Figure 1 (cartoon, rainbow, N blue to C red):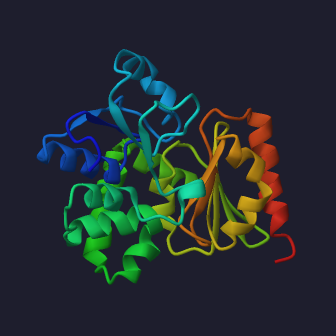
Figure 2: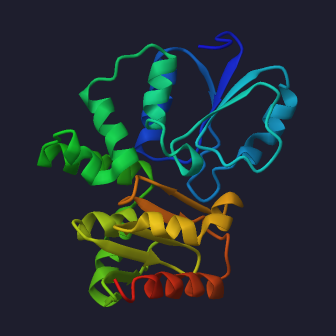
Length: 254
């Protein structure tokens, strides 16, 4: 690993993968900073004051949107957007540390990079998938109330339009909904603050929203059947509805 003595890892949005990365760094007594970010605010600028105070350190930024000037010595660790062809971030960190991933870490990586299909592809059992998804939701901050709101969203706000299952969610934690509805072909979940599309044809939407992806307002990952979504608060409620309608219309003739 480069500059082992001066390296600092800057952690991105909390989920199971980030939790296990943090534990891995702890076990190797490596320095890191964690600003308790989530997917909506996982930006390099969250660490600007720390970086300014330590300009000569070597930084590894893990799944952070580079919305400001990067430090002079900086390596991005990610597997989203233009880094989507790379291994899961936890596998990149493991390689840096010369750690051979055990089955649990491989499951965490498969889940983060490919969700349930990714775990199935590596031969995960039903109990392993249930356990990993439960841990991931907990790491994301999904509460029991969120779980109940997810059930209510599915019961009261579920429609199907042009082959797309559409949920106007009562909770911002969409994983509590998507886990309950899996397997699905095309799923769109949204609130007034954000939207996320899951499933078949995701690559088409990457093209539709390419400008927003470059601007750091939309993210994606997981291959053609993965996910694409907006960063929370990046768009107005009206813009969210426009995006939702655009996605619905995209599959009108499919």
